[in-house]
Image (cartoon, rainbow, N blue to C red; front, top):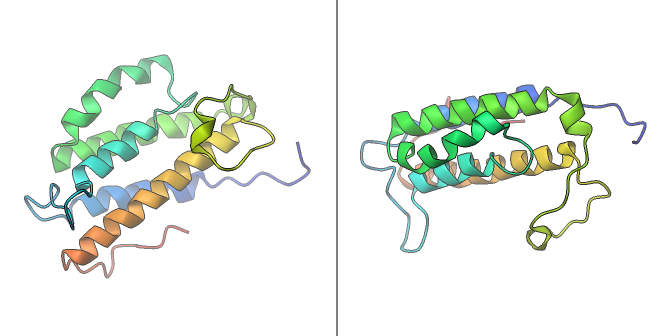
Length: 160
């Protein structure tokens, strides 16, 4: 471990999750399935992908895993997406508040997808990847809303 003091960025991530929930409601009726061009993912699929990625590695406890099958079905509606964002956030928050799980080192799976090579594949590194993944897809969703002509004024577009 380095001597660098730990930063608790959980509040920032929680705030971003609340903003994701807020963004769901900015998609007009019928627009969650819209794509800017053929081959792109619709917003409802992006939300489902974002939520499912939160179930990566050591983050979910065994009881959390029972929700995975519901995610694609629930993410077909705005209310279901918001429910899954809330439920997956509660799971993330439990992981982020458990120092032993954050400090633990985990076996690497799927390293071919990551270009960086962390010194330790610990819970902090895994949480960082999930946060970056959320932020990346949130940006795509904001881009979709902009292309749909939805004004974002007053809708907290900067998470940090």
